[in-house]
Each structure stands twice: as structure tokens, then as C-alpha cells.
Length: 329
Length: 303
Ligand SMILES: Nc1ncnc2c1ncn2[C@@H]1O[C@H](COP(=O)(O)OP(=O)(O)O)[C@@H](O)[C@H]1O
Ligand SMILES: [Mg+2]
Image 1 (cartoon, chains in turn blue, green):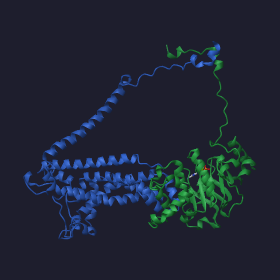
Image 2 (cartoon, helix red, strand yellow):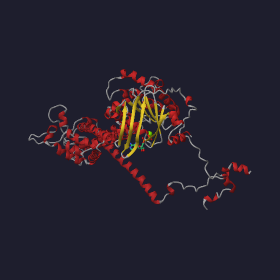
Image 3 (cartoon, protein in one colour):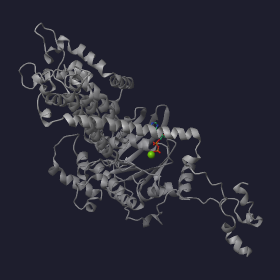
Image 4 (spheres, protein in one colour):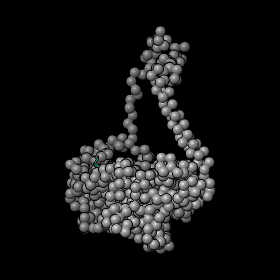
């Protein structure tokens, strides 16, 4: 018997029993913890309610007034709502302005990010560049707008905006507004590209350098293709911000009823001209603005909301794809 | 009454039975790959001709500093064609740093500075244009690092000078296939060179990196622990490959694995804290080391 016991000591020495932990359920919590827990739930649900309320209200009001002919007809000056035409020009204005902003912002932002991550010397200059971009990112859009107005009213920039007969430079045009809009998108594209580049492993670069490739060649052929997704995400975020901006449109695009070309060079005349976007259209026609076409304002607001939601969806999709991009190196 | 009381002290006679001390520690061999029973019985037919080829590189009093810290302290040695030189030594003793100075990759580290001379075919490496130097002194890294492109593009990228589009695919195909053949990878691929390189297994990826490195027909091949991320089977394949490659170029291999150094190397350099402690033929270093430190290191690892 004794020999058996010595062979199987585990039978006689069971693991020491510890007090059973009290279950981690709300019932065992202190009152302050329960309160905080409830508040967290309430906050989350309240946000959902707000989001649903916005989308729901806009959908109801928007769909109530949205007719296909509103989307495809130009706005008209008119006193009664039925005479005010459609929102074709604001839609085109939004698209054109976004394109200009993104086309200006993307190369500058990507080039800056590449320089900062891959070169970044002297270090003091790199810090300066980073703080500079932070300042641009933090500047309120209305401040950017009036600064842009001050700049583009200089005689130097007369060729890109409407010039009054007396020689006064108007300073308002698609180019002027697009240039300032690019400052809104630039920090987002820059940050996304920088994050992407910084997350690439050093051995990818060194592998290329060790083959006798220059830094530039490495960046172009090995690194940039790897951060395409990051750039796309940044561009999508920037697009969302440009589409939603109002201040720069009102101040720098003129917020005229229709796209109003200046001069008679095709294409360029539109860029030099003024116009409006969905945001400025909503503002001008809402009861807070001149308030003469609130139904059209709701329809335009709904279209704007749909565009922004679609862009957000695209950002999500890009982000999700890039998280499991097969970077097995 | 607490639940602890229910157990109480264990039976008195059991206490003798419970070992009061953990079992004595056994010496654990550092490497896991099986040692060859004797050098002749290595897993591949080894051509041990002692006649090494012409000298390719020479280091004269090479020192490397990272900021203030000196990590390579006056190393002089020569590297010959047709010969595998293994750099061994404990972690952090400057093996990787030494290797990276040979193709001037340490220059990518801002804090690194170099003293002494490094000569490639009697020419200072400083005087060779750096991209040209790196095409002549190729390197394989510890982690397989194929580029996220197709297998073909990985090697074509290495062959093309910078970003030139010419030569095109048709002109490059023979050179690419040749590099893959020499790296012993071509037959496994079954002719499909358009697969993404990252889909290959770790061992295949490392051989792709070797193919990429030798595609420009370098004179010297630097390998920094090329098998440390691989399984024993891939390791054996790569060791065999090194035995093949040494005929046409000079190979310098850093390895933690002494058994591997024993299997692949012709000469062995033992480094300790930045000093070159011992340099000699593989048999001499492993069987009759001159320095006490080498004796300890080799004995410790072979146990
Ligand atoms: N980029 C670096 N900057 C500063 N110190 C470094 C750097 N790389 C390596 N070192 C230091 O240099 C010493 C040698 O490192 P390394 O050459 O990698 O050794 P080994 O390859 O023999 O393990 C180590 O002490 C390490 O901390
Ligand atoms: Mg190392």
C-alpha cells in the first residue's frame, strides 16, 4: 500500500484549492462601477441614435423633395421654390473642386512624406516640416479661406481669377478655392503615407540597397508600390473633408448660383471662374441663408450625405484590405 | 473557515518523495541540427581542396564605431575566391557590423563611422562607386527579404541597372533562369516565374534571395546568418548550395551555428567583443584552437 502511494503521490497531494473567484458579473460590482458601465452603454447608444436620426431625417426630407430632374437641371434664380431649378451645378462644382484639391495635394503630400521618412536630414528641418504640416492641419478652414483670399487678390495671381474692369483682382475662382482645399487634404494624405512608409521593414530597403540600387530607385520600385493603399486611404479621407467644407467655398469660390466661367478659353475659363458646391448651395438655400428654397436645400443635403457616406465606406474598405495585405517580408 | 484549511499539510512521508530541488540541469547544445559524425561524412559531398583562389577582399585594421561605441576593433583578414570564410562568435560581438562594412551598408546608419582599410581587388571600397560595389559584393540577409513582386521581377530588378526598363523581359529571361538554376530553385518552381515571391516557403524565399544576390555575378557573397530563420531541411539545402557557389566566388558567412560553420567553412574567424581572436582553417579552429577564448566557445557549444 505504501509503495503504491509513493508511486502515485499526485493522488494524495491534489492541487491546493484556492477560493473560487467571484464571478466577473455586474451583480458583483461596486455601485460606482455599475454607474460607469451604464454610462458607457448609454453614450454608445445615444451616438447611434443621433447618427440614425441624422441619416433618417435627411433621407425622409431629402427623398421627399429629390426628383431626378433636380439632379440634372441647372439652378435658376427664382422667387418661388418651383422656379429655382436643380442642383446640377453644385454637384459638378463639388466634383471639380475635390479633383483640383486632391490633384494638388497628393503629389506634394507624398513627396513630403517620402523625404521625411527616407531622408529626413537635417533633423531640424525634418522637425520643422512636421510642425509646419501640423499647423496647416490645425488651422480652421475659415482662417485658411480668408488667408487664401488675401493671397489670391494679389496682382500676381490676377490670371487665375476674375479681374474687374477697374483692375481689381477678385481673388475667387475654382483654382484659388482648390489650392486652399488642397491644404485641407494634404495633412491627411501626408500622415497616411508617412505611416505606411514608416511601417515598412528596414530589410526591404536594405535588400534593395544591397543589390546596388540607389535610394530613389528603391523608393520608386520597392517602397511606393507598398504604400499605395495608405496613399489611397489618405486621399479618400481628404476627399471627404473637401466635399464637406463650406467656408472656403463661400469665401474663395464665390458661391455663385451657377458655374460661371471667366474668359473664353475652354476648360481654363471654368477653372478661372466661380461656382458653388453642394455645401454652399445648402447653406445659401437653407432657412439660415437667403432661405428661399429649403426643399432644394434638403435634397442637396441628402445628396451630400450620401456622397460622404460612400467615401467613408471606401475608406473603411481600404483600411480593412490594407490590414491584411500580405507583407510576408 | 477558509478553503485552504481543507487541504492541510501533506502526509509526512510524502514530503521525502517530493523532490526538494529541480533535477540537475543538463547541458543543452546550442545548435539543434545534427552534428556530422565526422567531417568526411557530411550530408553532401564536400570538395575540400585546400588550394584557395586569388584574394578578393582584404581588411586592414578595420574599426567600426557606432557613435562612441567601438564594435569592431582593428580586424585584418583576407577573403579568397573559392573559399568559404565563416565568422563565428557570441551575439553582439560585431559580426553583422563587420559584414555590412564590406559592401558599405553601414553607411546607411547615420552614427556609424569606419577606420582602417577595406580593399576589393586591391582598390579601396571608398573609391568604387557604391552601387557598382554592391553589385560586386552581394549580400544575403538573416530574414529572407524577397520584394513583394513576382519571382521573375525580383531577379530582373537585381539585374537591371537602377530603374531602366531595358533590357526587357525577353532579354532577361535567360539570365533570370540561370540565376534561379544556380540557386537550386528553378526545378522546384515548375516554370512558373510569375508567382508572387512571398508565396514561396521560407527556405525557397531565402534561395530566391541568394539567386537575386548572385544574379549580377558578384565576386564576393556576404551571408548574415542565412539559415537562422529556416528549418533544418532548408538549411541543409542552402548549405549544399554554398558548397556549390564557393567555386565561383568568395563566400563570407556569419553563423551562430558552430556545426554549420564546421560543415560549410574552409576557414573560420572567431570574433569576441569586436576583436578578431582567432583565424584559421576550419579543422584547426575547431580541433586545436590557439586562444583560450576560442577553446571555451567551441567547447561550450559542442559540449
Ligand atoms: N545601428 C546600430 N546603432 C548602434 N549600435 C548598433 C547598431 N547595430 C549594432 N549595434 C551594436 O553593435 C554591436 C555589434 O552588433 P552586431 O554587429 O549586430 O553583432 P552580431 O552580429 O555579432 O550579433 C552590438 O553591441 C550592437 O548593440
Ligand atoms: Mg548579427
